[in-house]
Image 1 (cartoon, rainbow, N blue to C red):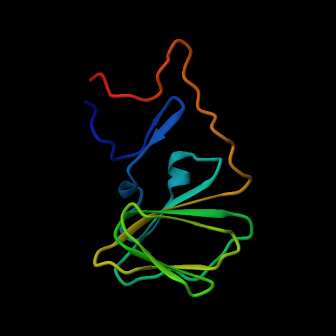
Image 2 (image 1 turned 90 degrees about the vertical axis):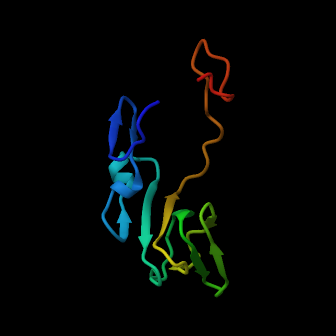
Length: 139
């Protein structure tokens, strides 16, 4: 079995990393830059306990938030608030004003993915000579 990835590793057509290795302490972890992502924006953000982001919106970019650890409260332009824990996800339209607050008792880490231009459809292919895309590992 391979060792668990901690630092950035570049291979032939892929890059791997652990978000905890991309920065020390709170703030942005530049996932897009570290992994060389070009098709969409993606960052991990660590918010200390009791901290919140400023209110913001986007001109064109729809965003998806995924909570990696901790608990965050999202407040939207209509003052609706919702709490997400680890594994929680939210999609937000570009023009929707949002604010994120750490409401947990530990640092919260969430992934923010943004893009424009639409879904490209299911374009996954099985390599030539192979027939299975999903199943129990043989090892």
